[in-house]
Length: 237
Image (cartoon, rainbow, N blue to C red; front, side):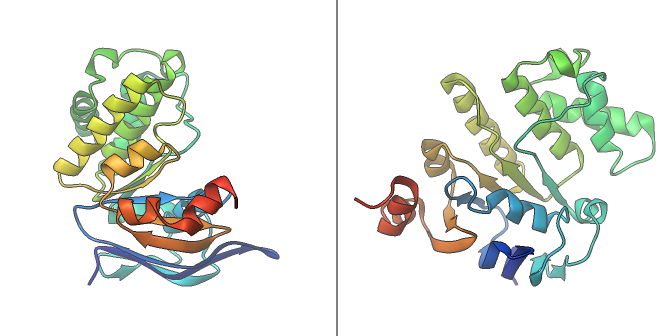
């Protein structure tokens, strides 16, 4: 039994097939990369896994349980957390309050949610900014707070959607170190990212898709040197 897997996962929006018969498996403790050109179906795939879009056909299984048809909040309670490509904090709340809101996924007690939020903010090195307004954060800190919110839900599997986009080289380095620390804490990760040196340095295995279909999956070296992957990103010679 695989820790996580998709089986012939397909999503159609009318006549448009956004994800087409995608199969992949992730083992516990891995960092698994999902790459492809813009519009290739990566975020749609995340939306299928987490229940934001209903699945047209196929299946998503997590720790042996099929997730098809479950609402988003139940999938979160099963242990799958995620970040979003476009970060939308609760702008009028503080950093602490934003993360507490996510922590209420596991408790109804304010004191427990606060303790969990403080623990996660310390882990993400944001504990000096707990009382900052979320609207005043830099892009780098917003991205870090987005990860903190996902961690506050208590995930066993974390889906990261372009957490490095818009960051400076130094912030990218710090982001990579944070992701390594998350894996070390026992959380399995699937990451969507366009910055190739991040993907190649982090991932154990990678799946590349284009037009919603698999091109190739394998080790970072195998994927980076695959001619079909190169053509998908750069075009034919």
